[in-house]
Length: 449
Ligand code: GLC
Image (cartoon, rainbow, N blue to C red; front, side, top):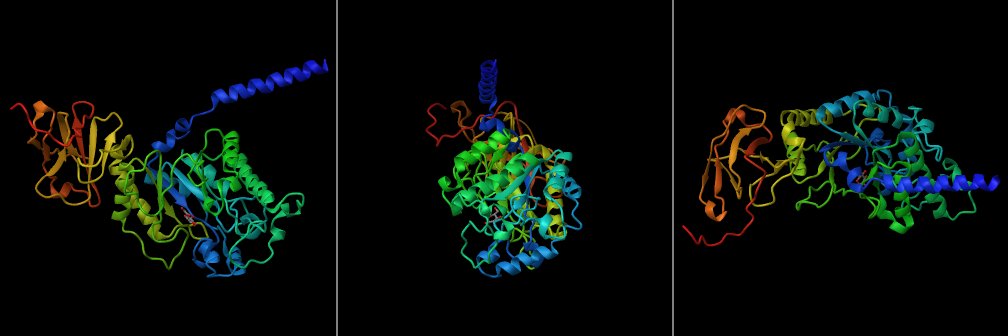
């Protein structure tokens, strides 16, 4: 009887594993929502906003002592934190996901982790888990949840740092585990924190950072990725888990050459990730909108950063920029959502987008055009051309080429009336009679005339 029971249990386990394997989602399936997301909001919220200094790095660069940096916790209040307002604003702007720093390199956790006392519940006037309400609010608005987690922890006594640091052992209960080496204990620690995040919030996306400090082997990157997927099979991971990420994560400098595969570009509105009131070097709204257009025209998502104040409210410059981007997106939503990366180089001087069925090309004008707008190498017959967000249709003519030799000429499109130009980026919709057919040759003699 006993053996029969064991056999039944074994069969159950094997069977479950087989089913588990079959049900495993491919990377493409996991990335499906992300591919269409276009806009995410990055949120760097932490102690550093109290003094308005660099996030974690101010300690690293010895601009502030460890003790003074950590004393910022006394004034981290979250007293006006209203994640429902955040989520409503993000949704209104047109974002499909948001990513919150649950733990930056400084080691301070925004949730009530059981693995370190260095968390906002124990150390600050906030006295509560700040991640759960964020997750709930995003999900209530139908937004995907991204959790940023820095692999390095510059407070953990088992993690060596380059700046002077007092003894922090009392904040890390696992230090008693003497049978493990320092590094083994650290691995167990961060894996434990990630398990807490996975169990409690089931994030749709993990946004790792700091992977450059150690090798893939040291981070146990491969097995960590396996564990993340075992805990949370639909999740996706950014590229800062060495080579085990699902999509790439360029930052601050917009890619010049179109990246391959799925990608997301993250950028600050001024020069700082966290709340830094003396940094007033804000990018103008038009630059933020242009950047967004350039990113989606190259098939990526923009992860636009904000740094909330320690009380949980936003700086007015940041809110204003979110609102303005939102207005532009709203006006041009058919060119933003339901589109994909545009034409390859050479057809149009500026970013373009393509409807998913490739029957519409969206031309994005950054500047006021002169004389006419030209589009080259389009084999298709054109049905109609109009300005997105306005009723004006534009006349067009085709000039040159040798259609009988499949060499299309230049399409000359009438320029919009001044009042129909958008003050940031004007989008022209070129509707084709059928699916896009491009001429990509370098020209040849026309042998028959
Ligand atoms: C860099 C910085 C970090 C910031 C991150 C956002 O990796 O180290 O402070 O959070 O960029 O992408």
